[in-house]
Image (cartoon, rainbow, N blue to C red):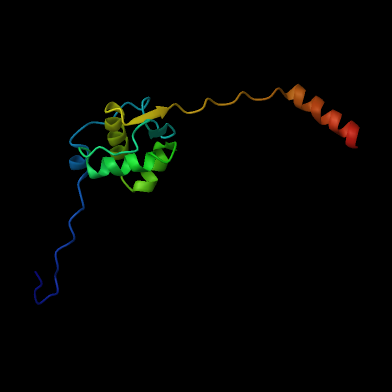
Length: 125
């Protein structure tokens, strides 16, 4: 509706997060942290029709290989909380599998590194 002053209604939000998540709450941070790796389960190349369009989008994105939760949120432009809720729902349905983040590597011993450096200096000057 436009009037003499040129006022036009604002564009409505596409879909509210509450509607997308169907009112579900956030999963535990231990289950789906930002760096948890997610991929489609074996045999999930054919997408089930009963999933919401957002869930199908996530499943299609995860079918290419392992992605972190943060990467998935970046690709979909959904809020991180919404992505975590949808991923948890897909995991419960058996559509996705997760792999915990790789443990941090142990730091190398300083003495061993110094011995290697001294050996390289002795050999190559």
